[in-house]
Image (cartoon, rainbow, N blue to C red; front, side, top):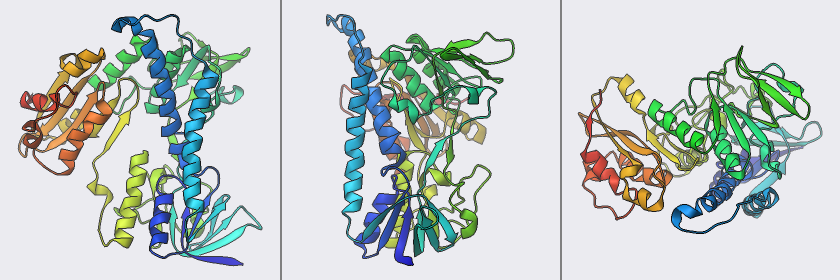
Length: 459
């Protein structure tokens, strides 16, 4: 027997539960289907557990630097079992909070199992004999997973992904990380600070390759200064088993790298290949992302896609903003759009990188006349006082309109200070609004107006 609902939400990540909350508050009967863990990537295998681990790694790093601050310290040890237990406690508390909210939500029914379309309005949960659900509106929030590349020898060795590495409660002797993106770099610094030898192997010419070259170079310098080995131009990786470990050869003729643990972090793919989208007539692109319009509706009028599966962003904040856009259009008569938002994100190495808008290279490629400002963190009083002077801040402005086009803050507090710039960009105010604002001293943010007052033409 088919169970009828006003709306079905597939996936209980960052967009699904709050949308269910808005829809049920409007009097609708909603089904939420989750095949695995409520809370999605962020709660279970992403932001919350990884940033908890980053905090433990930072504590170990700071303890080792005690003498720099006049604090006497002895040898610093890391108890990986306790580190993992702390991570699990924080993650589970968050997951249980979302579960309790959803399961106690009036008008919401939670179904556990994998959902597949049987027709454009109907989904079956859990395979043959499972629940059959139907609704006038369907919202997909199915997330993504790690890409496993086709590399010679990879299938012959045990390897970790961003999910399975979270279950480690012992320290690898040599962690080799395949990939040079944000997930790879965060785990690299984290495990180096825990005490492991770490090597990052990147296919391209530099890590953090979506950033400007000076940002990428500074990130590499930060990691190498802590003892992380970075291997680039690894365009012909081959892996072979060796005892309890493995050898990884990055390119033809290169010496093999002997590792004990291998983390594969070369990218993410959407969980769209086993949803029965063909039965619903929903289109995907060449990467498997569900195609959506500027208000997140698919080519099928009554089906929407939110979060990582739509290719419009791969962050918790973009997923939650997807929920806000859908809810605003459906329930608030507020025509919010994906194109309204400004690209923004952070890389949570230490010090962190906060980013907003365009890179300098993107501005240069656009042909605009622009002004650029840059200030090293060695000239930021707050960073000097804290003994954390790595990195710099950089901003680029349209020379004709005074619009802030983009910024990067790689330095202590960069993930927070970037919002001073982001908010001005969102308000579409000229850069002078920020350059003439009095900020608190001593802070990192107080040097943003100074940087804006010292800009020069972008060559």
